[in-house]
Image (cartoon, rainbow, N blue to C red; front, top):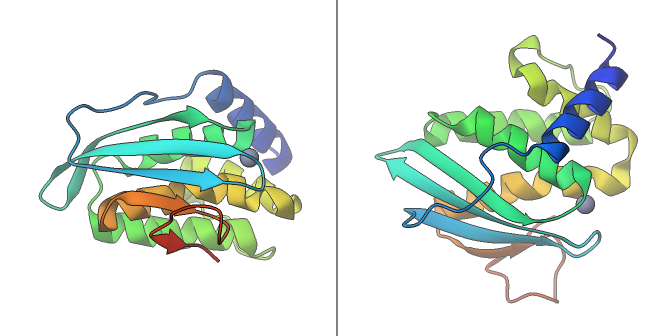
Length: 157
Ligand code: ZN
């Protein structure tokens, strides 16, 4: 399948039917993310066993790309430990931001996110959930993709 078609199909599918949508209560870790450029907001909640993500939910309101990206992420990180999540995050970040980054077969449906790099203004929509997941794994709290308009514990570049 052409990457372009994969991108469209996967984003549409996961936006229409987000996987793992909702909130874990109680949760072992949560974080909120906000992308003021687009208006995307989401909350990621996790259940952890030791170092491993045993369950994940996300909720919020955002554009199709932010919702689909969070849905894809939730499927991809369940059952992974912190080191594996970090590795996957680095991989996705390269995929989103480097035009010539190779698209690895092992990424499965996540490879569809590489379509976002054709639209630089949407990269933050796609990466918001990953930054929010990182924040939940680090210390919880609120992250924003922009400085100055959020009581953020971390500002993303
Ligand atoms: Zn967005």
